[in-house]
Image 1 (cartoon, rainbow, N blue to C red):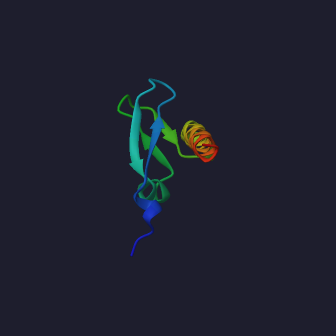
Image 2 (image 1 turned 180 degrees about the vertical axis):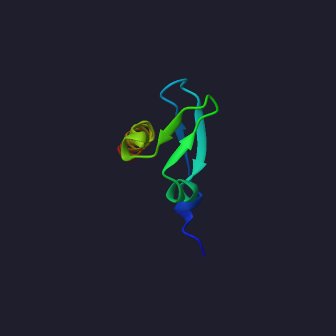
Image 3 (image 1 turned 60 degrees about the vertical axis):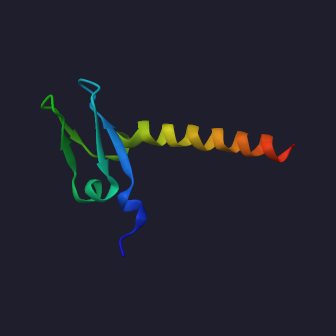
Length: 73
């Protein structure tokens, strides 16, 4: 059975046109770059995922606040 995390999707934002492309983790593991529809080649480095990491961090913080709030009532 495949690792569930491989099915998760991440959005990659083009630094040139700000278009986002969604790919699965499995796809991203197999490739070292992605070509945007505008023609720009985006190297897949840890920095490429800064936007997704920030979004995930914000979601976790929000979830913690909800849990903390509900546990005090």
